[in-house]
Length: 216
Image 1 (tube, rainbow, N blue to C red):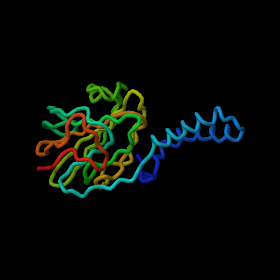
Image 2 (image 1 turned 180 degrees about the vertical axis):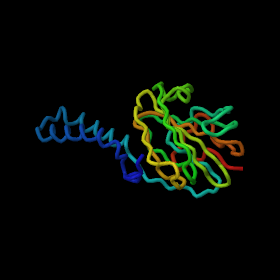
Image 3 (image 1 turned 30 degrees about the vertical axis):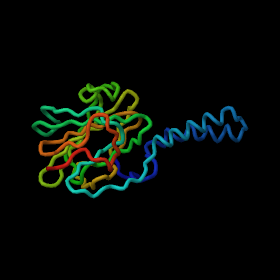
């Protein structure tokens, strides 16, 4: 798990995907093959856009839990149990399409507790069963006043690599980049009792900026 390069304008883990079409674009351009130059240039620009890591103005609202991902809320539901933390919670599922920014940001500040990577299937990430069956990386963040927030990076039908830059015991800031999921995927956030949910299904959210809940 790495933290180096987390604030770079592009996700460094995406470089191996960017270089091949970029090199081919240069080669066919130098050879004057315009029929190949245009499609490879478009492909290179698309992949660059996919791995973009734009700067974000993080709101400093105390008690607000921010979205860890860009995308659309595809589910808001009560669940009986959560990973690592006993008791009921409200699960908020955020689906990231291939057009969204795929960098993930910390929803609150605090200390990283448990981290557990679980192998699984690669079902479409917008399906509810993906939370139970898909490969995922689960984190527990210990915030102020004993708050424990659980969230999971969930792989999708195309996403086959989850990147996490933090380790257990790391102290992190709200809105700080902590990882990414390469290609379409989802984030599940488990809000504990005592947190008021302020989003609804269908709402579009932005990592490090949109509020998911408010601590009462």
